[in-house]
Image (cartoon, rainbow, N blue to C red; front, side, top):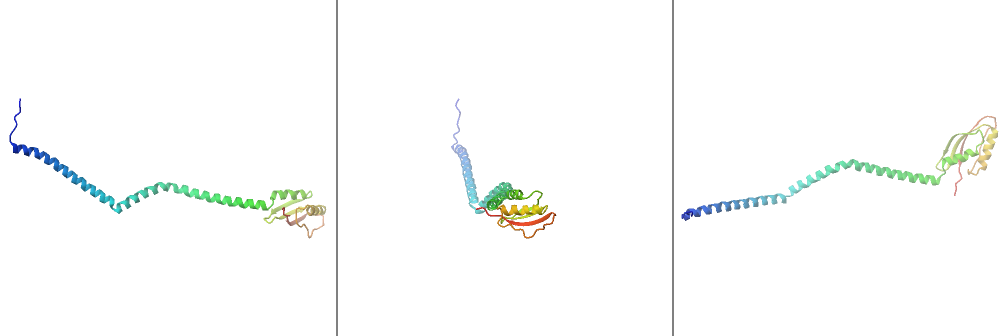
Length: 183
């Protein structure tokens, strides 16, 4: 069957155009609203204080992440300073060893020159290659051997004992000797 249509054109026109007007009105309102939001967002992003706030926030987060590494950085700086100090000390020791004799070698050579029964009570090798030595010599015969061995050894620039006692008792000698420089 066929459906009967109304021929009320005015009512029909109003019905058809009222739906179009509503959708058009909704569309226009949404376009205005989106445009207004877009302009507001653009104005907001264009303002410098917003960018300043964003950059400050990012800087704070980065500094919080880096704060963990401050202890590591200070430890590394301390390690570097200690390494520099060790290098300086090694350089100094190298210079000192090349310019002076080694104390244990000098003491070994001196011990070979000592007569039997002679005791070294103290020994020090100075930076200028002078030796301060304290020895106890048992008697006058050993003292004569001591004097001849040191004088004829060729290790020292000058060996002269000013005063000695010839009594038969232990002699305590305190000597400062100058080593010959090897070239």
